[in-house]
Amino acid sequence: MKMTKTLGCLFALMCVCSAFSQEVIDDFQGGLKAALPWSWQVPGNSPLNTLDESRIQYAQGWLQVTLQSGTLQGNASDRNNIRNLPSLPVRAFAPGWIVETRVRLTLNGITGAYIQAGLVFFTNADNYFNFHLTMDPFDANRLKVSAGHELSGSYQWSGITSTGWNPALGNQVRLQIRQDPQTKLIHFYYDRENGVFWQEATGSPKNPADYPALQAILDQGGSVGLYTDAAGRQAGNMPVAAFDYLELYLPPRPTDLNNDGCVDDIDLIQVLLQFGATGPCLIGDVNGNQSVDDDDLLQMLIDFGKGC
Figure (cartoon, one colour):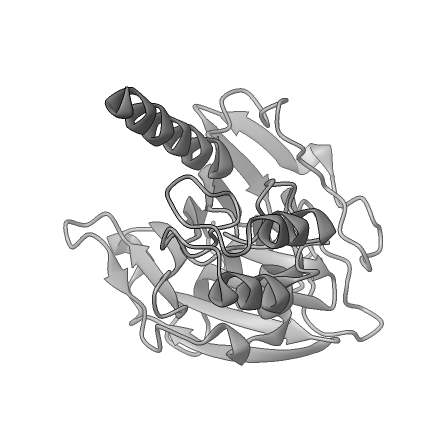
């Protein structure tokens, strides 16, 4: 009988863990996956709906974006006019999250401009963090991996970069950002798919507090999307950015006991109702030490309101 109870409890825990973790993948087979809440809207941008269907194609499992004038960088009168930024809404992040894409940047002869394509985390057009493949006009128009962030319309370089390479040696890269669940530091990786495999960017890892706009998204939720920027280019043979997939792995916050994306009264009550209880399979056991105690209550109070 005891064996049956133990197995039942372990099975229940396994089900809870698998249900609470969220893995989202879109490989762009024939379009954006209809089951996912994709949006082309960026709050604070003009126009709000960034979609220009004439610049979007889906071919062989890739989302292809022909770049055009428009950017998020800065808040001058000619800024906050990004085009073709698809994104997915995300709840508050728990440490251990991973976001990844594969991007191919075809320059079509363009030189002398910061051409960018990659990942972006944002709440609105003036508060975001991006990690991208870019052509650097101050490094002989070579490709490299870089990142930037903007808080209240003030843009700054992130300190994240890689060594540059000639586009003739490859114009495709996988980009991955992940947070270590133990140290809470954020790591930035890239893979040029040239046999070296994943490399950590120079300047990585970083404390999320270094990027307040990103920290706000991790704590409260926002959007994750695919960003392109032609550095104001408006005419001629424009670059093309192609994205093979977008993958999000989003573990839950341990204090979000009912996995509704918000640490609130319902979660707090679960801890209070079980306070002092010991044993396996306790919903209020936030840290997993088989005891609902002061440590669990303290963590609940620290996280209270996150994601709401």
